[in-house]
Image (tube, rainbow, N blue to C red):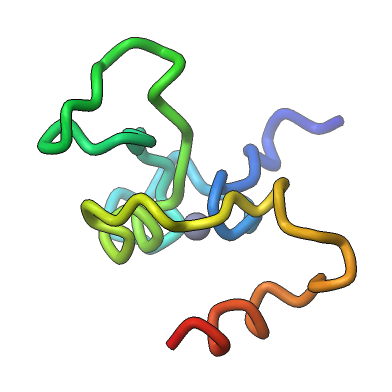
Length: 84
Ligand SMILES: [Zn+2]
């Protein structure tokens, strides 16, 4: 594993970058349960998500993590379009 490649976003699975805060792929901390809905700031409630997903998800709690999606529903885009 090359550490410079970064880690995948918890939601979309795309690699995040650490250097460009203006990029949609910038690595951010996302709260699984939004703080406005009683979420805590303990580590268990925090995932690393790209800025794009973090903003788009907002306070929603029904997003499915990339790693938890059924293998047969592989393409991330299909899932996205089905939901919208
Ligand atoms: Zn993402």
